[in-house]
Length: 331
Image (tube, rainbow, N blue to C red):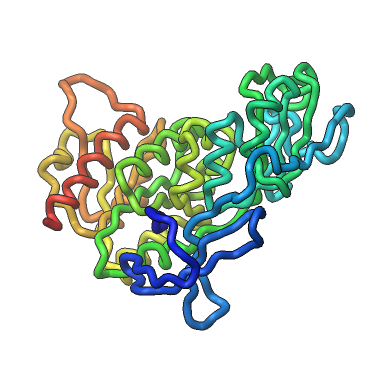
């Protein structure tokens, strides 16, 4: 998303890379929640570039709701987080801690509510938008609600929403693209680490299948440090078919990452401009059904007799290599 680097007057003409000149409008009344918006044709379409609050902390009034009943239905989304994943059923997800709450607020997802321990209220409540319910509980009661000792002071729930389709994200054949493909990853912490790695090294998206953890689960979001809120993680019921479409219609080449010394060392594999890097399951590696779809099998050379690397560690090595190989190839 474009970044605002200066505050401009309403009606100014601004130019955004890849979009061209557009007129700037300020949405909202003075002293209220405002947005900087670029207007498009037709008029009903616009792009929100940044949001800001014009009011001071003294002027703000938090939507504070004290809670004294563990069974209050308004906090159901925060209940027994370690034992259940009912956030999927509720159409929401939960983030924990100040940093992830901030990243939720900055993301494309809508924040629905927040839950605060009383002793953190003065420090943490100021970051929550005024129209968001903030449920305030006694400190000891927070642990009882979430189901484990919780020391970060604040949780927030976000509203689930769909990313654009993988074809919309990666369909432009003229644009280099690095796609990370995870047909099956068993451990949420591994998926979270892969999301963080893909984000910081500039991959375009992650394609996952139904055998992967929920990309908006608490553990994935925690380990990814919020990258799964920023990095498109597309869940396909049939990821193999989605990958095949990208190969046939969008000019992708697929490389399977394997622990096989007879495979091509990754440093010797050329970098196709549009590459899908297929990562395997922690225990069984890349499913053999995927190999016929792949143009090459690449490996990370290891000492004789070594087993294999953790999938997230291997992902870090390979994504870094192919991301920066792409940059060199384009120069």
